[in-house]
Length: 128
Image 1 (cartoon, helix red, strand yellow):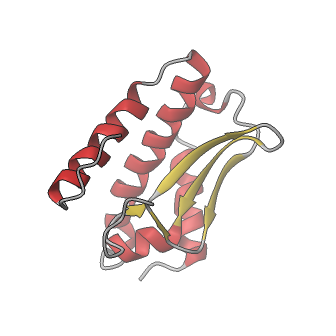
Image 2 (cartoon, helix red, strand yellow; image 1 turned 120 degrees about the horizontal axis):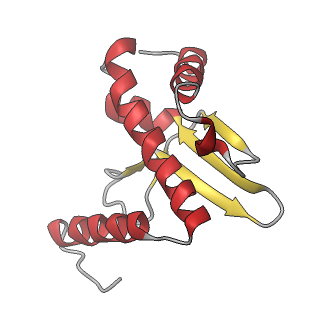
């Protein structure tokens, strides 16, 4: 299993490969939290939040990546194998950030559709 410190280093390495424009107005940066985070719609703790983009009045704009969630889902992968899903989640969260700056919400809609499909699969198909 990849340690929290190794995970943070890997995350930093990946983030440093992104274009400078990605970081415009991301005043809170990108950081990792140790604990896993479950999605509120999770059935039997089977749906993890891997990362979140947040914009808060007092704290600004930032991205959080949940190490604990990654370890629950991808803990069996080697450090090198973990890079791919971590990069994918980072790009997903940066897309939220960039769409927010542009006043677009396409990814939020895609995410809501995925949650609705999850609900359907788990017999929990209430309206969004």
